[in-house]
Amino acid sequence: MRDGIHPGYQQVLFKDVSSGEFFVTGSTMKSKEKLVHTDGKEYPLIKVDISSTSHPFFTGKQKFVDAAGRVEKFQKKFGGSPFAKKA
Image (cartoon, rainbow, N blue to C red; front, side, top):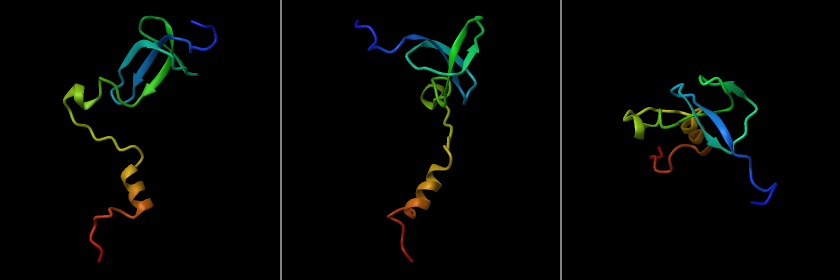
């Protein structure tokens, strides 16, 4: 490999904010936050909304996540559905 063209690969601690679970895996992602994990080592911390511990496909549970009212924001911006009956 040529020097200076590839991102650094390191062990990173990911936190699933939906379930509160932590997992360590290799990644090229960078973070300003660091956290000491249960193994006593300090890792860069990356927060994720959904992982295998909270995704409906893996858990078998349906969970509604509304990220800052996306539907309402869309309806406000575009005036609702184009298929809605007009009075």
